[in-house]
Image (cartoon, rainbow, N blue to C red; front, side, top):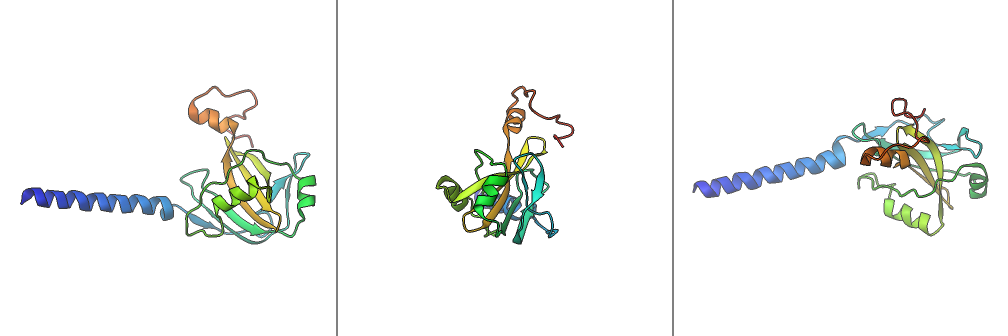
Length: 175
């Protein structure tokens, strides 16, 4: 009888721990970002200045628990030809999954749009904090998505490789 009770206790504890971890990963730390309405979507120009582009229907989430948890969605009327001729492209960006409840951000669909050339990725801000860049992908039909990308300096810092001279100071984050 003691063995059965112990088995039930272990199974219940494992179930509670599993549900707790799921909740913490998917819901607990995320907060809705309140848009400013003026500078929520910024891109870096080809000459290195940051500019706000026209946008609407902005919604975003973020969490203090990780620098790469930021996700945002918006719409823009700015033509793709203007974007590509004015703003710095970002090479190699891969959208990160968002929680399922943040349904405007589908990383798989955004990734396919980028791969198939239906979306372009632009630099928003390099080294927003050390090793983390903010990137913006915009589709041909004006849907936009924002997320944080670990850059080369971040990769080196996190895997223990020596940082190159082109990496910013870790204390200031490069800003």
